[in-house]
Amino acid sequence: MKGAIAAGHPLTAEAGADVLRAGGNAIDACIAAAAVSWVCESPLTGPGGGGFLLAHDAREGRTRLLDFFVAVPARPAGETELLELAVDFDGDTQQVFRTGPAAVAVPGVAKGLWEAHCRFGSVPWPELLAPAARLARAGVVMDAPRAYLHRILDPLLRHSPEGDALYGPGRALDAGERFVAPELAETLDRLAAEGPDALYRGELAERIAAHVPLTLEDLAGYEVVEREPLAAPYRGGEFRTNPPPSSGGRLLAVGLESLGDSGPGPLAIARAMAAQEEARSSSPLRGTTHISVLDADGDAASLSCSLGSGSGVVVPGTGIHLNNMLGEADLAGAAHPGERLASMMAPSLFLREGRPRLVVGSAGSARLRGAILQVVANVVARGLGVEEAVEAPRVHLESGVAHCEDPAAADELEAAGYPVVRWRERNLFFGGVSAVEVRGDGSLAAGGDPRRGGGAMVVA
Image 1 (cartoon, helix red, strand yellow):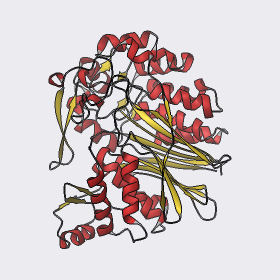
Image 2 (cartoon, one colour):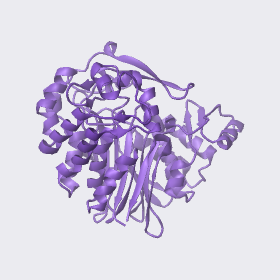
Image 3 (cartoon, rainbow, N blue to C red):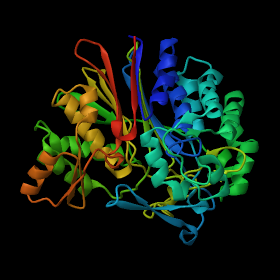
């Protein structure tokens, strides 16, 4: 087998699979997939956001974490300038997002992917971005999960004239309609030809700085940071994940420690999530996408990227939708200029005897730590295949209330005294996991989360 990939959209996964099929490595596949995700998952990710890449070198047995999450600008705007938007998931569950130009932090994704390519890539950079540019010009047909996402985020996505031009014909796009982004295609062409300097120092940087409270110095001074992954033991293996200053990986380690060798039933999961909630200092709510890749050499890439909910600000002439990370109430003003904001994102890897067993990560803001925890437990402790593990019903515990996708789990937790919210069907509220596994016989399998219309491919 040449590798396997799981991602938040079938076209994202297909782009990475094409690279693996042509002989590219896990990092190459991850970069190509990430660029395509900017088109087919544009409300969640793009060059205007930030992220993290966990890269594992099988020959060295070493895992590195590249941090290219968003940074605080020199002149952050005041909280009074933030706009508030309530997003309704299912008619009963709402979240309020703080958005607008004042919410925009310094993006890092383009520089992060470039750094990963320079250090670990083998396929020329322009070849990796070309499929995304072609897709942006041709357009992508909206499927039901994406139409749902566009619908619930519609007041934000079309908040500005540029957003309205990019995201809809005066309304949210419906399933079966085509999303086309010619200006984003031109931006991708420029990034392919010039590298990230096109965005951080060139004309694109000038357009960004002219449109939101970021300076040219904010953009030119942004740097990718390498960090040592956080490692935690679990059932005879080692779990590696995103370290501080981000909190998602630390909370996952807390959850796995709580689970220990116990069976991961609903009560055990609820107790583990209660331990996570007790350990957390904040709970930022963000939209995210995740890509997991394994190649034929056993190298792995686990990439999480996010725009938050998005700021609703699209830079004129570029197709770039900017993040809203400064809109998090608990983060605004909490860091000095140039410093990273905190994040719940947790690209992760589970190793058995020093070799990758599972590559995993999730979308879902505060819910992603629970989603990853349950998939890891499903694979490692319960022995489920990765597809079944990703599709299995989930529990999310927050403020003492148990949200449940499965009626039997809801009954068990209710009998144990938990207030319960029963969800009628699978929902992206419970995250969007993308995971790849190495089975006992050495074969590969991959699972993309149906809650977000994910895709997965094994390349023979």
